[in-house]
Structures are given as structure tokens and as C-alpha cells.
Length: 71
Image (cartoon, rainbow, N blue to C red; front, side, top):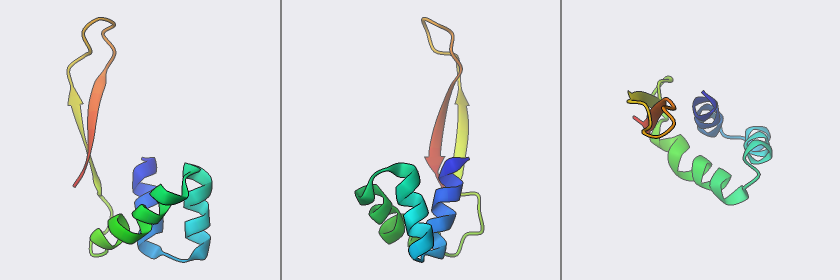
């Protein structure tokens, strides 16, 4: 997923990766938080930063639902 790629770029650091994340997210504050907090948090982990839990269908329109969590 996209979240995994953004976390990997934050882990690697560097100006080029930072600019790519800002360009994708269009928010400098969130990109800064990603590089300052989230990237170092997963420095020792080689991928698998997210967990996708499938929930039941939404009541009303029966749309499939899922919860995405950071591990």
C-alpha cells in the first residue's frame, strides 16, 4: 500500500525522499511528522508496517469495510 511506501521513504530520509513525500501528500506538516516520528519508530523493521483487518460489510449499502493499523 501507499502507507508502506511513505514510511519506507521516511526511514531512508534525505531531501529527495522528503520532497517526494511532500509532493504526494501536499502537506508539509504531515510529511515532517512522518520523517520525525514515524520513520525512526520503524527504523529496525524491514517492511510490514501496516495491518489490514477486514470488517463486515457496512450496513446500508453493503460496502466492504477494512481497518488499517500501524503495527
